[in-house]
Length: 270
Image: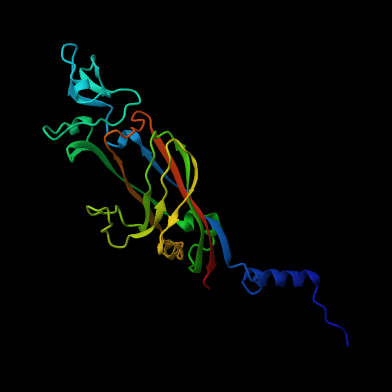
């Protein structure tokens, strides 16, 4: 009896077909390591609502600036008091007359002196299926498990001039337009979950800063990542406060550019 042999080319053809149709997939083919898409967040010192030029009038004859604060000088051409170079936030007494608005929209009278408080709220949409190359072919599927390996802030540009305080990172449905806060800074918007804290960034310092995840922060973010085809939104929320005697940012050109990113791994659900 003759031996029946499958031609080599036919065997290779069948093997290729089986592999392509998932019959001979390797054990680890459903595991993915990927980098989260970079999300850029930027803050301009000019948007803080604090001005280096006030609305306090002065002139050659009546220079009232120094009597308001030693850091103020008279711009005689403009006829108003301005903050001198390297000046600190003025210690202005507003108990008798509220002159704080003269220093900018964000400046108000608190406990008898002027303070500046600016709310920061930045957001970015994340679409893993479209933005992560490793997930383009499987973006319509779901993951049984997602592990967040790293989450960090890469500060690329920092000419802000002062320390940028720690801010909170939140995750929400992509349909959420903004996060609402109460007077204590607590989030009141439904469906918004705290992920962690972006650490304070020292003046003019660049480089990588790891996000400090909250107790439930890792789960809050990885739950959103389990379905790559459903975009979600990240929010950076905080506030910058400047009080009497505090150093001022570079109000003319101070700028901070930071990128939130990270790395993760996932297992596909079949």
